[in-house]
Length: 615
Ligand code: F6R
Image 1 (cartoon, rainbow, N blue to C red):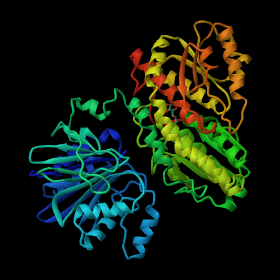
Image 2: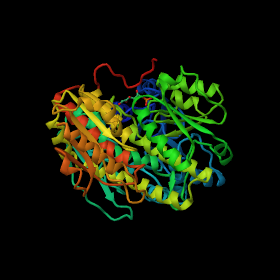
Image 3: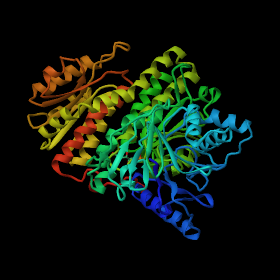
Image 4: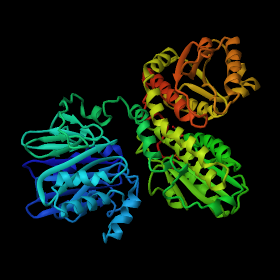
C-alpha cells in the first residue's frame, strides 16, 4: 500500500519527508517522491525504485522549503516508473494520493477534451488537474480541493500543496487511512503513524469524509459539506515496531483485518449493479473472443491454487465454460492440451512464482490467450499476460497469504460474471443479484472478524493438537484445503484438507479422540437450494461416531451443527459461490491464534519464502 507523509512548519523539510517515508518502507513500494514548497516555488523530485534512488536525486539538487508532501507508491494504475511516481504536479499544484479513483477514465477523457495534457498513466494525476482548474476559477486551495473531490468516486487519502497558497497542506480521507500529527510550530500528516512518530505522539485519526487544512499554527477540521468538526487527540504509546503493524502483533494479523478494505478496493469501480455487468480495466476480452473459447486452463501454486479451484466453480457455474485447474509445477511437464481456443489464467499474488510463470509461457507458446490475476503491478507474470486483472490487496508482508487469497476470489467472481455476460449464459438481472451479493461481502467479512474472541478460544483449546483435519464440500472444499495449508505453514501442526465426502475412502481411519476436525458447514442458501449442508451433517456424525472432536464453522442462527460440535464459530450467510470469501476468515484467524499461542514466527515461518522464484 502506498505511503503518505506531509509537513508544514519552520524547518527545511525535504530530508524530514524522506525520513518519514523510510518509516513506511515496510508497506512495500516501487517508487517514491517529494514535493517541497519554498521561496522559489514548488519543486517535485521523484524516482523509481528504492528511497536511495530518490535520495541520490535530492543530493544533486535539494529543494528548499518548509512545506512539503512525500509519497511511496505501490503501483495500481500504471507501471512503476519515474513518471508514475507521486507527487503529481499540474500548474502550481502537487498531489499525493493513496487509493483508487473509480471514475478516472471518464474524468481523464473530459479533461483531455478540455485541452489538458497528462504526463503519467496514474489515476492520481487527475486530482492535480481538477484542483488547478478550480484555483484558476478563483477558488482558494481548500475550496478548490473540496470542489475537485465533488467529481471523484473512489477511495482516497489525499494531501495537496499549492504555490498560490503557501504554508498550507490540504488533506482529505475516504476509505484510506490518514492521520494528522500535532507538533510545536509545525504539524504533520501521514497515512500511518510510524512516519511521524519521531516528531510527535499526539495525533488525530481522520474519519471517512474528513477534510483538514493544516498550517504550522493549527489544524482546521471540517466534514464533507464544510461544517466544522472536532476530533479527539490521541496519544500514541506504541513502540516504532508496533506502529508499523498499526498496533497488531504481527503483519499477518493486520492483513487479516485489512481484508474488508482490500476487497472493497478490488470490487469498486468494476462491478456495476445498476447495469448488471462488470468492467475489467486491463482486460480486453470481447464477446467474439469469449464465444469461441472451448476451455479455461488455470495454473497456480499454493494458496493461489486453492483460489483457482474456487474460480473454476465460479466460471463453470456462471459462464458455463469447462475449466481445468493445474498445479503450475505439474502443468509444465504433462504435455497439456491447449490451443488458441483456450484461455489460460495464471493466478499469483507476487506475479513472480517461477512455476506459474513457466506454465503460463508454455500455454502461451501453445497458442492460448493469456490472462493474469495478480497483485503486483508490473511483475513478471503481469508483463507476460495479454490481459491482467489486478487484485488491489496492497502489499502482503506476512509470508502466509490471507488478503491476497480473498481478493483473488473476488477477482475470479468478477471475471466469471463478465464471461457469463459476454457468453449470454447470465442475464443482466441475474448478474445484478450476484453483484449485489458481491458488494455486500466486505461488510460480511467485517462481521466475521467480530467473532475473533470465539475463534481465539477455540484456537487455544486445540493448540496442542498433533494433527488436524479440515473438511468441506462443494465451494467449501477449497476452503478446507486453504485452512489446512494456513495451519501447517505457520503453526507446524500437521494438517490435511479433504472433501468431506472423500473421508470414508481413507482418512476416516485417522479419526479418534486425538484428531480434531474442523468442519466448514454453512447452510445452503435458499436461493440455490443445495445438498451440501445435509450431507456435511452426516459427515460430522461420522467423525463423532469415531470419537473425533469437531470444531464447526456454521451459519449464524443454525442449531443443528452447533449441537454436534465441541467448538463453534458462527458466520453470516451469502451466495454459496461467495461463501468461501467469508468462511476462510475463521480458518485464517484460527491458524493465526494457534501459531501465536505456540510461539512460532508467524510472519516468517521456517523454510518458507514470500516469492518462490525457483522451480
Ligand atoms: C501460502 C502461500 C503460498 C503462495 C504460493 C504462490 O500462504 O502464500 O502457498 O500462495 O507460493 O505464490 P504466488 O501467489 O505469489 O504465486
